[in-house]
Image (cartoon, rainbow, N blue to C red):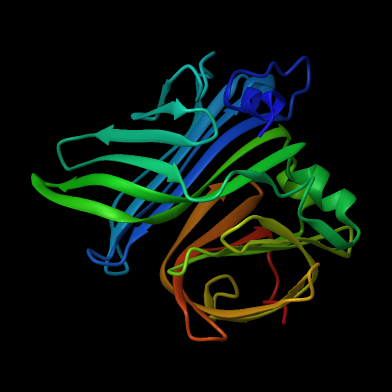
Length: 305
């Protein structure tokens, strides 16, 4: 990635923009221990605050969770190393590896995300089909996403568990307006054969937008078309199963289904995120694990089809 992309790991001033957001997101799942983690550190310098989300789970049930809103906004970011909500985050190699840790008497973790594939800007590179402008600009100016191997350990009430799995990380910067995004859906599997797909379907202003791409083990390719279907639970927010069918710009078909292993809700004022870690099955039978995420502007009606 370029020097400009590396700057996204450091401090970027709000310059009077009240909705200016910098955020660093991580997820991870180890299929051997059935343990996983979802974490996000958000910096809202324009509003003078920061927030953090962190949820650990095992066998589909939460182990530990901590949500912090309206924290003081520190000047440090990923590049310099920063502590927020009890989590400490620092870059090891820019855009390649990062370490996130947390320590409390009941629960602790120390995990490193090491890039399997290079981070890619889903907004600049992945946008295709529909009206991308209104959804993408509500999300961020830049949104780097990448697949990683995740290693380290978790400690639950003194019992240590070695962690060796996969997960995603993203780096976002821009004016974040949750309320302008009526609804969005993400399915991000990392398959056991070294490939990964990032499917994003956003709805804003009544228009559909897609920002989807695939890494085939050699490089990222933009998707030419993306279609997704969802089956929701009675709460109209929890995903039971989702199917994605895509064709990339090289004419290759990428189809997969996901069934969640774990689900949690993350609050964002007039918005809520339903985070799922799921097992994915590609049309050729290859298994993967990763994120299924849905965002809902409140109040939310019955689930769309």
